[in-house]
Structure formats: C-alpha cells, structure tokens
Image 1 (cartoon, rainbow, N blue to C red):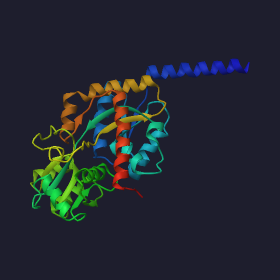
Image 2 (cartoon, one colour):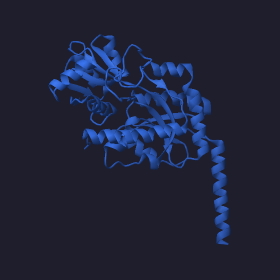
Image 3 (cartoon, rainbow, N blue to C red):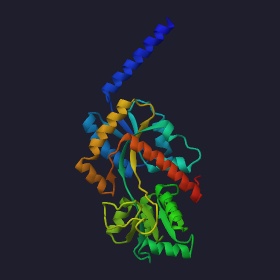
Length: 321
C-alpha cells in the first residue's frame, strides 16, 4: 500500500510540474538585481523585463538588492524556489570575479545557478585627464616603468571588474600602477576629470559626461575589437598591450533545478527582445551591445571567465577582505 501511495504521489507531483511548465508564467516574475537603481545590471533588467512582460503577459518586477559586493542578491536567487519566478540579472563581477577573488562566498555559480541568457556586453575604457601628459597608452607605459607604483589610476572599487582589468593591464604591459579605488563609477570618473588622479578604467557610461565636457580623453578600449560606440577608439591590443579582451557583460540566470522548458522559454523570448531595434538603441546609449547567444555558449563564457580571472587574481596577488 505504501508503495502504491508513493507512486501515486510521485505521479501527481510530476503531473503538477508538467502543468506548471505548460502554464508558465501564471503569476508575476521577479528579477533580483545586485545593485541600486541606475547601474548597468538594473538598466538591463528593467529594459528586458518590460519587454518580457509584454511578451509573456505577466508583470516582471525588478527587485534591487544591493549589498555585499553582490552577495546579497545572488545568494537570495540561489536559495529561491526552482520554479522560474525568481531570476537574477547581474554582471561579470558577481558571476565570475567573486568566485575567483573571494575564498569563501555564500554561493557557487556552477552548483546553484543556471544560465538563461547573456543580455549585453560593454567594453571598458582607459581614460586620462585632458591636462595630463598622457596622450597614448605608450605614454602611460613609459611613465609607469620610469616610476613604478606611483602613477594613480582610479576604479569603482577594489575587486570590481575595472580593478581586475587594471591588474590585467599591469601584467600584460609589465608595469605597476597605483590603484585608487572609489565607491562607484561616477566618483571614479569625477576624480580623473578633476585631476585628482591622472588615469582611470571606466565603463563608457561613466566616462560619457566628462567626454562631452572635454575633461577626459580616451586612450583605448579594453576589448579585442573596437566599439561601435566610437570606432575611432583603438584597442589596448592595437596599442601594443597583448592578450587583453575584457568586457563587462550582463546576464540573466535562475536557480539550479528550474525545469528546462521554462529556461528555454525565457531564453527564446529574450533572444527575440535583444534584436529589437529600440532595445539595441537603448543599450547603445551606454556603450553596450546586445548579445544574442545560445544557453550553452553563455554557460561556456561563464566557466571560461571564472578560470581566466582566477589566473589573473593569482598572478597579480590580489586578495579581498
């Protein structure tokens, strides 16, 4: 009798699960974002979330959960029910740098989360104050080699993607800079614009206001190819720094165990959204490009980046408190 009851319960559960998959979504979807409103992940979540709401016929609610270098939101996502109603949109930082930089974090990306889609990809830019003597990457390298660890370069904070990119620049160019961390991209950009530090590695969106006011100049972009935001900006590779291809991607993930049909439904809807003209144009205003790709390719990118950042962190001797 117990066996019969068990089989019946399992059958009912399987039937209910299949029904949920077929009817998904039947209630609002929540997207967790690891930072406050206005950042790249928040903008991506709201833009894609609104379009997703239009296509699936349910509200998509963006829930900002800042704190702990992304730990708060990602941990909440990893502990959510595996039903597809709690998703997370974050950056390369939360999903690939944190696992490389921190020894003990409250989540494991490969164990706890499932990739759905990469949403956007944005190069960083190496910039200089317009009053500084640095008009090229060659100028920076020459100065840094003359006086190691004295040439200041700002970033949005220790352990950020920008900081890791600075470390990669140092390794590839054979130089040592003086890292000056700030609390976010805006103050890091303002510092180089004011001349408090001569250099910075910034998101394009953080640099734009000061480019428009003529207070900073772009020396190079961090990706292997030039950005469509301004095709005149050369890459670090073109400027003689080898093997740097660093971009700040934003992606959507769900907790591990969400039924595959739900993951694929979300993925397919998002691929349609990413090629919409108004969506591409909105991302482009911040220097980002939408990146339609398969789930398998996105999963491979995450794994590759984790391994790459672990190598950089080890070679550069970086550590986090």
